[in-house]
Image (tube, rainbow over all chains, first blue to last red):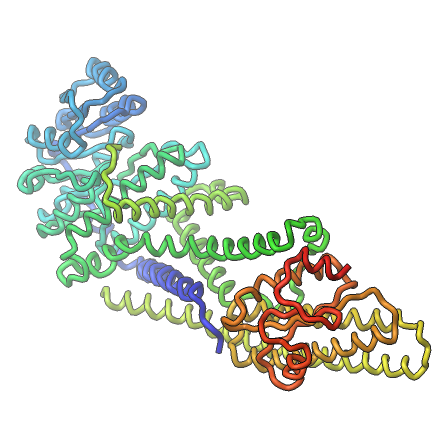
Length: 426
Length: 211
């Protein structure tokens, strides 16, 4: 038998978790067809549309707030049943002026706050002055499609009264630059993941990009809370905790603008991961609790510990690389930095003996790659993404870089958690 | 049923993982056996060099050494490659310690034979080739042994065929004990160069001696 190193153990753990998650998805896919038919039979068109308020909180979003507001008014929801409230949360840029300009064109309520108090407070301000049946939240850097709002409301009307919130699917709007493309791919895979989860009635989060809630239920629970700057996730957990149901819409899409600079992306992710972990910690009674089913046994633990797995997986290659580098540098140092000798004697040898390679590692890598490609192509197929988006070599290299950006965000997140430093707003 | 899904996921994960593990272990065993076979071939090649040497001695032709040096040096290079391989396997945990120790003993005896042959050849043929016998220890007795090995590898590259290095593990008994006795080896690393013993030497110091 062979000696087992720490690197091997880390590799096995990461691989085991990856295979487990993949097999879990695979099982849902393989059993897909039966459940699909049931869902299709349930859909009915609504005759009378209920009233809905769309709240758009904005903080320093001068570049996108105009398009957000316009997209709501260009949607096909009956205008007599649609109320819009735009909140300026103490913006320091031209957001306020742009909103006022829009007010001349469209009819909506404008809450102009002088001081920035946070998105959750802004939403509560809007919530407690609404008396419509539904209350929707739309991020000011996102745009709805024509039928986004209608589709969610239709689904709400066809659901039972324990359903408290339905969220839309997110797509990336600005995918022209490489970073945007990577996030676009990530969001596509995320949509695919959400559709699979919704087949087993599992929901991750009612996202702040576009979610619609039952106004009365929301008011009864006291509205939004700060939730470590991830008030959407906090609210989702609170709704579930109060025995309400939450759903994922499969036909309502919202386009959001994603960070196009690495710094901004890392900042965003740190906010997400930090908030996720702390919110789960607050609701830790849900973990491995029979009452919450798959959410407690599978989804929440995965979200809580997922960062560790990603860190383990990404740090392994770095560890091996650094180990080798250290050895080479030491040899160079001991030789008195005689680089010429090393260069003269360097020959790139491809080991002719096939038994030299680490088959264990290769096998696991190849298998993981195959699984990833399978899910990606499946996601593309299911969501009818045109073939031209299937990639070239430089995209694959950038994809690896992207994974390390995400891993780096986790490093910072855990550092913050350990040292409990406060976060600057946005 | 959610439980069924979990069993399915667990089953697949365990199957894939153990497949990888078993495949790896199986191939690594084969790898080791093939390595051992190569080492045996090395011994046969040593035999044929010794035979050449015997023949040449018979001929009493002092100057015709170039041929045998060439063969000798080629075989030694191959042996050295195997040493590097063996160490790499050991470093990356690809063979377990027991198998490694046995093969190492075999290998070291082969090294010593080459070393003795080099001394004989130096006697019979004039040459500007230097020989270093490197005695090392693998436990805590020798913190500088890793560094010394790196330095010797570098010198190998620097001097090319003009320097022969033989490495022996001091823990081995038999002829290694005799060598330790002869050169009064008590601490490690010890380098035996041209019949004199030295302790840890840096690259520059060794270049001075080998001039």
